[in-house]
Image 1 (spheres, helix red, strand yellow):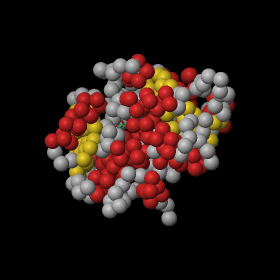
Image 2 (tube, helix red, strand yellow; image 1 turned 60 degrees about the vertical axis):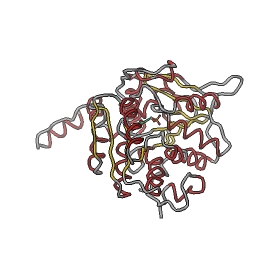
Image 3 (cartoon, helix red, strand yellow; image 1 turned 60 degrees about the horizontal axis):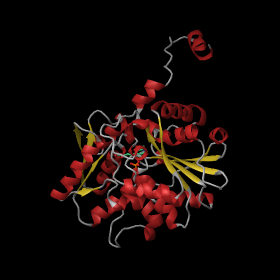
Image 4 (spheres, helix red, strand yellow; image 1 turned 120 degrees about the horizontal axis):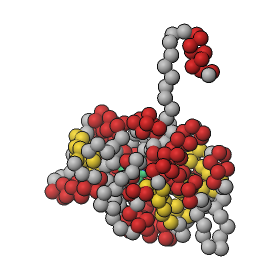
Length: 344
Ligand code: AN7
């Protein structure tokens, strides 16, 4: 029987003994070797494909724990601000738990698949005339005022659940990789990986990447109007700022920026040459490795094995795919026409 994260790791998670297990059998995502990427980077690179989670992103790891705890506490409703994936995951786990769900998303700035998910799972979907940072500020206040559980990554149980990705990587490799490349938005996930690695007594170099137009951790100051094609990481004031920076420093790693063009190049190349379709924000980790090279630490040999986290599935964002992919070839119902279309 496939088991969800709580069943596999309950003794290392933050649940109370009586909490129910709200699960969609998330986790156990594939770690995919990529010889083509390894060759370009100059080290063995493996892709942790989080798009294989039940709602198509890594958010499910945190949501199974956060929603189980919320249900255990007697909550009747959950809420989040989201660039899309948290909303989809929150809506799905709320449906699973029999809780009401509400999600606040920046109007016009979330990928269409994520919106479809949140609506289909029956959450109340509110499109805010503002950005993610505005939405997060508002849901923080709402959850103070009303009996509704906040399930953004400011919720400690989200980080607990997400640290299991580090457990899986170490279990599968038999040791920690030398480095981990990861896209960074609100900075919850990098915080979670670091906690997971630290709990296992390991310390790979963390190498985080933000989109150039939304890179507060790189510039050292909040970005009032973040912009990037990678809508999932269009975040100007990360909630886990200090913890993420502390993790980069402790791991002897760093955070760097990649341009939208570099993100899209990596996104297309991964799909067409590696066979892995991730969403644009996820490709920031690969774009970063390609643009900035392997992380270097004084007097240490360069990393030999790097895990690259691909945080969400490419199917989330069909609009960007169609805008960047080659066109469909239309064809008459005729052998010669099809022959021409296929072979010319
Ligand atoms: C595909 O869904 O913030 O640094 O509201 O969806 O932990 O924020 C999504 C973030 C990377 C960044 N890749 O992770 C949300 C949201 C994908 C994402 C990130 C997100 P964090």
